[in-house]
Image (cartoon, rainbow, N blue to C red; front, top):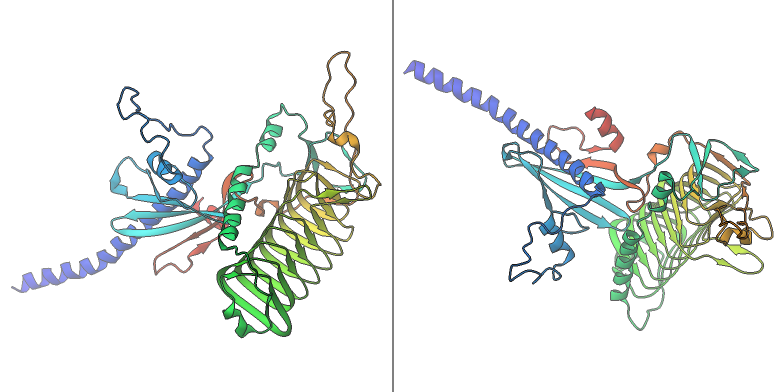
Length: 479
C-alpha cells in the first residue's frame, strides 16, 4: 500500500509538471501555424500565375453553366480558395498531414489599410497574427530618381543615381507601368462614396460647432452638414476609435488633439492653427488644406487638391494619396499637391490623375517616397526615392513645354522619311534631391508595387512579455 501511494504521488507530480509544458508547446505550434499562414497567403496574393478557376468542369453535364455567373465575389473566392477584402476566412494548407495543425486566413480592408489575419490551430489552442500589407519599392539602394523622360536632370543639387523608364520595352519600365493597380484604389474610393451617398439627405443642417470637450459625445456618426471643431476657447482633446461621416466641410481651428478618429468628408477638409492629429484617417471628396503649425500623422485620401503651408507638418511615415485633375490656365499652373512656406512631409506621397502632380517651395523639406503620375516642380529638399513623369521648371512662364504632351516627347524613333520626333524637354531640378539612409522604412499602400508585410502584430500566451512586433524586428528574430 505504501508503494502504491508513493507511485501515485510521483505520477501526479509529474503530470502537474508535464501539462503546462505540453500546453505551452501547443501554443507555440499554433503560433507558428498562424505565422506561416500569413506568409503563405502573401505568396498566394503575389502569385501572378493565378489559380485554375474551372477545375474538373464537365461540359456534358446537364447542370453545366447553371450558376457559373451567379456567384458573388465572396462565394467565388470561397469555392476557389481565394482571399477577397472583408470576405470569409480561407483555410491554408500548411502540411501534408493534419497532425501538425492548421490555420485560416482572412483579408480585412479599411480605407487604404489592408491586413491579413491568420488564426493558427493546434490541439485546441488558437493563436492569431496580424500582418498589415504595404507595397514594396522596386529600387536599387542608390537610385533616388525615376523619370519617364530620358534626359539627365540639370541644375540644382542632385545626389544618388538617375534612371530613365522611358524605354517601354525594358523590364523595369514595364514594372513601373503596371505598378499602380488603379482598380483596387477605385474600390476604396467607391466604398467611401457609397457610404456618403447612403447617408446623404436632401436638406442639410446648420453647421455643428464644438467649443468644449463635453460636446464631443454629442457628435453623431453622420453629421448632416458642416462640422467645425473650434479649440480657441478651450483645448479640445478627442481620443476615440470611431468613424464620423461629415456631409459638408470639416474644419479644425484653435488648439486641439485628435487621435484614432476616421473622417469621411463630402466637401472640403481644413486643418488650421495648433491642431495635432495622431493616427487619423481622412477621406475628402474635395480639397484638403493643412496650415498654420498643424501636426498630422495618419492617412489622407483626397479627390481634390492638397495644400500644405505655413509650418504645417505631416509626420511619422504618413501616407497621402491625391487623385485630382489639377488645373492650368493662361497665367499659371495649379499643381495637385502644393507644399510651401516651410512645410514638412515625412512619409509616402502619391499624386495620380493630374498632368501637374507636385510642387514644393524652396523652404520645404520632404523625405520618404514620391509617386507622381505627372510633372514635379521641386525647389526644396527631398530625401528618398521619387518617381515622376518629368522635372518641370515652374519658375518659367511655361513650366512644361508643348513637346511634353506630344507623341514624340520621350524621344521615340520615327519611320524613314517621317518628320523627326520632337526631343523630350529637359528635366529641370531647382532644389535638392539626396538619398535617404532609412528609405527601406517607407512603404507604398497595398495598391502600388509588390505586396509585402509592413507591420506585424501577434497574440501570445500569458508568459510572453511582448505581443507586438515591428516587421523588421520580427524578421531579424526569425533568422
